[in-house]
Image (cartoon, rainbow, N blue to C red):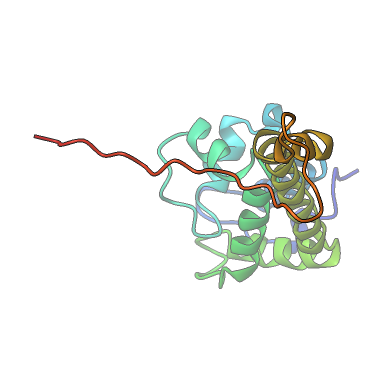
Length: 176
């Protein structure tokens, strides 16, 4: 019983990989995504093959590859976009281009791109809202506090007099 949607009969063996190896890689790829990109599933064997597909050739080691593509939703989205945009160069007798095409079809079928667009947008919004709350707490005093600061407690404000806040002019001394 296969562990995923891909069967060895769907792929052409290469000089160094059997059709079963290709099917296993495709199924492991989809399982990795379904697991929410668990680092424990990002094995050396899986990394070695993944780093040679979808144009991923510029990473030096497994931890760098993982941290570049799989540690946040925005990076996962970029990974999926690159996988879907990759033209799958080569001949199936020499490359995993047939697996790449099958994975692209499955990524589209499972709607991963839309899911991760939504997740990335939600993550960005949550991060920006946290920054906004922190900045508002720092720079916007509470409404009662602001009203107290504007009214001079010694001389009560009347309707005819306006409260004037003095602002000190910056002083710059000589730099030499």
